Amino acid sequence: MAEFFTEIPEPIRYAGPDSDDPLTFRWYDADRVVGERTMAEHLRIAVCYWHSFNWPGNDVFGDGGFDRPWLDPVLDPMDAAHTKMAAAFEFFEKLGVPFFCFHDHDIAPEGSSFAEESANLGAMVDEAAAHMERTGVRLLWGTARLFWHPRYMAGAATNPDPEVFARAAAQVRNCLEATHRLGGANYVLWGGREGYDTLLNTEVGRELDQLGRFLNLVVEHKHAIGFDGTILIEPKPQEPVKHQYDHDSQTVHAFLQRHGLADEVKVNIEVNHATLSGHDFAHEVAVAAAAGIFGSVDANRGDDRLGWDTDQFPNSVDQMALGVYEILRAGGFTTGGFNFDTKLRRQSIDRTDLFHGHIGGIDTLARSLLVADAMLSDSALEDLRSSRYGGWDTELGQAIMSGQRSLADLHGLVAGGEIDPAPRSGRQEALENLVNRYIERVR
Image (cartoon, rainbow, N blue to C red; front, side):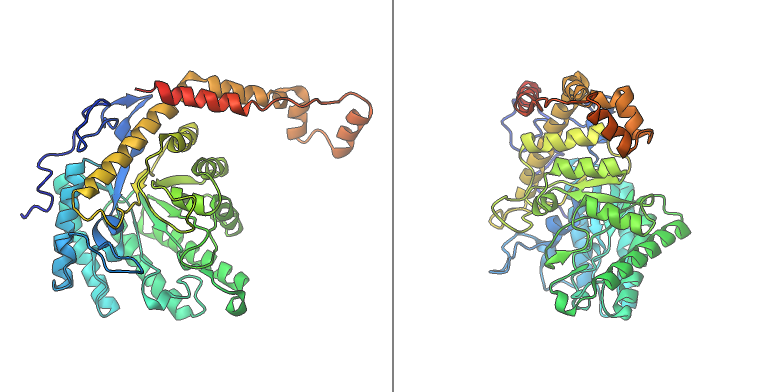
């Protein structure tokens, strides 16, 4: 079998924080026990197929310059798919990650008809199964690409044409069953075009009802085929459409409640999407966890000065540690993990750059995990947080929350002079300094 990453003859190894070798892990030691799990078990790292192996490096202003022989346009589409899959699994093995993720059309060409599309996907799923058996690499999640073809320009589930809805449903059935066949831990629905650009031609209420019906169909089929993975929605506020219906975790939770799906569907939170929605990554995790819908994470970063999805590799322990901390507070991942939905910068044209990007991102997550575990284990931060809400554990607080006090009761306590609260410091600066100390001390 031909090798595509010949400059990386051996799997990337852990060499410790003092290593100067850029092709080693400085912080990610897969077997290191952190709390009650190994790093690998905590992080459940996945590589995405689309940015890493499908993107030629182009943008709206110019062609791509990446060195990707499997994207050569002279290749037969299925030959290209076989070559690409061989390259992908070579990369997964050499990077040493346990999972990958894909869209259906990442691994198999669309073809000229639905029958050909289905046959192509079936053939490539068989090949993926063989690679997975050989390498031990598993599928974190699969998803259908319901935003690329012109038929989906006005959405898939939310399209004004029910025939487009039906075509999307058929495609999702194929991809959900492919994910099930490969033992996927989750199935993701990203509604990139489930929204609108102008209200002048849009019935918002109708489209939301269509989206709810579509999601119920997916959940029904999940149970029909015995898929025991988690169905995930990936929130994003905009791009490519101006207004996307799954804006953020809280919006998704309200939508799931309305359609009776709050116990069936969780969220796949992308860090860059949180940025676009005006939230911190940690906020999105905390809100999802509080609602019981936290599922998985697309690990990347955006640029605060740009208004689009840049999908850069995470490189800030300061920012990621707070998000990982919220994940640990919620009990950690169950079926989810950290998928690197990341792409190289356009000038990073060498195949080896894929390793540099992922190594740096994985090390950032590993060190963030160590910081988050230290924050949680030491309990100083949790103790300060608990003391701030201590009043709610008193007789008054418990009576309010259990429904034993009415508005009139509380008015009477205040009017009678029994309650006259004074402000208390939130101690934000002290807490920020405490977090910095954890970051400084981690080894």
